[in-house]
Image (tube, rainbow, N blue to C red; front, side):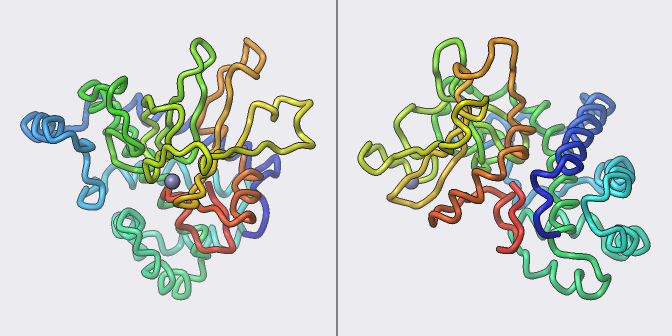
Length: 285
Ligand SMILES: [Zn+2]
Ligand SMILES: [Zn+2]
């Protein structure tokens, strides 16, 4: 896939995926089991509740969600129809559990042999795998997030799954900074002047930029915050600059604002989120 990121079919696809994820969450509400002692222990240790690199994602769930996801990919034609057909024909051999495990452990090298063997792009594998992971981790987040003190976590990584955010918002009511986990969807508070990735608080090396030509439109609410110490960036939506009626869904906004990732990366910044471990020619956020 080359540059479909801002095409209408890509955005429609993302919107549809958000809908099937929401329905999936409703269907499986309350099903996730997680030992109370483990929750208490990790809360006491001030650690994220899940260690996702060791998490064994249930095959039953990934299989079921793939049955929702794959027809959408076929319909929306964002990816090459041939690779979708190849993926579907070899789904069992590709092994979705193994795919999600490789992505969670950031072992993207292992996608390459699969890609060659089954003639499916690594970006396609990553897109499918990440969506499966997100769908399941959102179930975990629903179960676990009541155990975290989101007002006082104040770390740059997610209190539920430990991942870094790709996007954040400045809340309309009080301007507070709310980070959004790009994997499990959890949102939590963070200090206004601090890099979520390295803890840098020096305002001289914390900057942000807008996209000038977009400023008269709603995109004026979008900016990129960068840290010159660790060279990471995060996308920010200032809700106060949006019309009162708009309530941005950060999952969707993240996908809609890939133009900002492209700009930030051109300027030499990176994002340590799972979305951004994609091969360099692909920018999936
Ligand atoms: Zn998370
Ligand atoms: Zn930093």
